[in-house]
Image 1: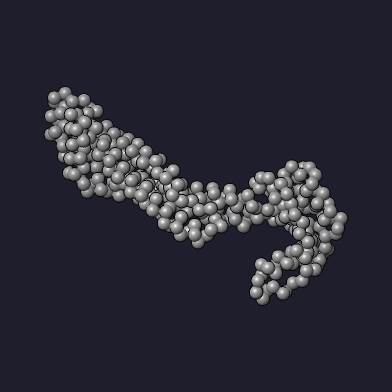
Image 2: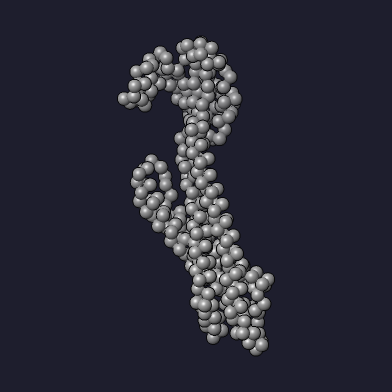
Length: 304
């Protein structure tokens, strides 16, 4: 009987203040949509980082003939200098860091260059003799590439030590900025929701002052009187959270899985499973935050 009465009072309050309840639902929907988007984007960044870092190599470029850069000063790397690098990669302290490495000759570098250039006008502007030999090194831990740079960077005959991460880190930096923007917008919208929920509860409590006065007169506990108002905030927020979860599912299904994943098959793109992993946290978060905000509003503003 009590449960039925509490629910009837809850839905009565939602109907009487449907405009404010709808506002709470809308703001919650937008804020949690941004929160979910930020979480999914960060998951995608983690996947990309794991996949790309597993393929990252460090290239040790030796001096080519007539190389005018400062380390080379026009002198081509000698066989002894090349052999010294090969030996360094197979002895400590580098041997324990190196997973594998390959030596690329001038002819191989020239063939790779022509393949990459395709039909470009630059394809025939260099000869094999102008190419530089190099070592392609795969590390056990790509994060420790600096060890290779410090050991080999200043050796005679070495033109440069290049880490492929320099190409992909700007991509991750850009994606992280998008995550930060989404998180910032989510924080603003959550703050808006936290301001709206107490306002909604106050209006609902003021509109039912006579009823709550009678309930207090007949001995109803504070919890029993306050519960319908708290449930109003929770339900309004939960509706918005459900729509946010639905929006994330649709985006994951049709945007990520059916479009981006098909367009970029070489990239591991997140999908519905990741969206469903985020969903429970959004629902639980909406219930906890709205319930706490409603309770604080009743404690501070409304003497029901």
